[in-house]
Amino acid sequence: MVVTPHPDDAEYGVAGTVARWTIEGKRVIYVVCTSGDKGTSDINKKPEEVVRTREQEQTAAAKLLGVCEVVFLRHPDQGLEDTPEFRKEIVRLIRMYRPEVVVTADPYRRYVWHRDHRITGQVTLDAVFPYARDHLSYPDLLEEGLMPHKVKEILFWASEDINHRSDITDTFDIKFAALRRHKSQVEYLNNPEGEKRLRERYQSLAEGEDFELAEAFHRVQIFR
Ligand SMILES: [Zn+2]
Image 1: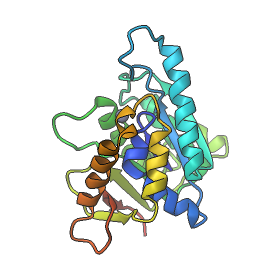
Image 2: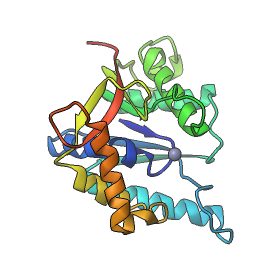
Image 3: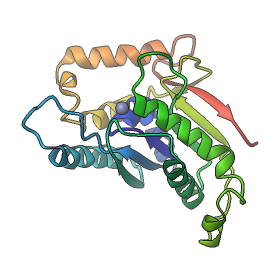
């Protein structure tokens, strides 16, 4: 399960790894917390138009990657808060889909880091442990038949403390194509210089490994 603050963050953070997983036959679910309604520099665009475009783009990108379901939570862009309601929403989804691995933004990146990214990472971490695990956390969810669930590991993208690199050499092209589905956000990828810069970024993340391109994470194993 990938929990992403905005449309496109997951494609930067983990799409190459997601493509590898789906090729291997694993099921991947996207949870998109906001629909990026502030993500435009066009002063004439209404937020609902932006939402429509960005959800379409996210759905197209996910489809290309073989993601089997995309859940839009539709919180306001730049409006995520660490609330009991948001946490419970994520717990509910974890108990419904019962993922082995959860991937999200690292909440502990310092200084200039989008508040929505920090909050998404924090709330998701808390939802995984301990709230999704403990049956007494939400007796009402239990009554609905949503049993507790132990996630085995969490991967945080954009971490300053990388301890896990995932080989995306063979899936970089799919990642790149998925990123390009976010047409309204990634105009810079239309020129070769943009593609080159992007490739270099994932090359540098593979430094020290015996593969060429990587996505890099802080990995936390919770239950073995
Ligand atoms: Zn974002």
